[in-house]
View 1 (cartoon, rainbow, N blue to C red):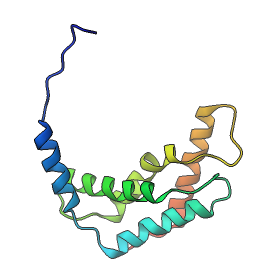
View 2 (view 1 turned 180 degrees about the vertical axis):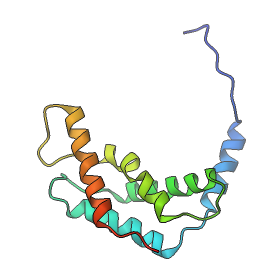
View 3 (view 1 turned 60 degrees about the horizontal axis):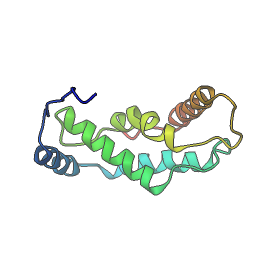
View 4 (view 1 turned 30 degrees about the vertical axis):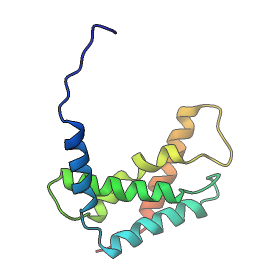
Length: 124
């Protein structure tokens, strides 16, 4: 692989600048509460060994801000949060009773997250 080279699309400074813009994307209180409700539901779900941590909660908020920015918005929609939950949380969770097949376990975790989303009303 020594002969392979990748050309940077953006500089480190540009990445830092974009991260700063993402941090400025507005998150309404009702959207914060929606995130908290989803996280609490993961903690209450007995099929999970433990629910999502505070760091995981923050990761969802930051991902939603970055997504909103990428969509050209200065605010986060509940749909942004909903669309990112499985991607942001699935690798952070483990089942109380692990399965022998890792892919099956991942599908189970993702299914439980979808169930939580379906049971958690989006703010309007």
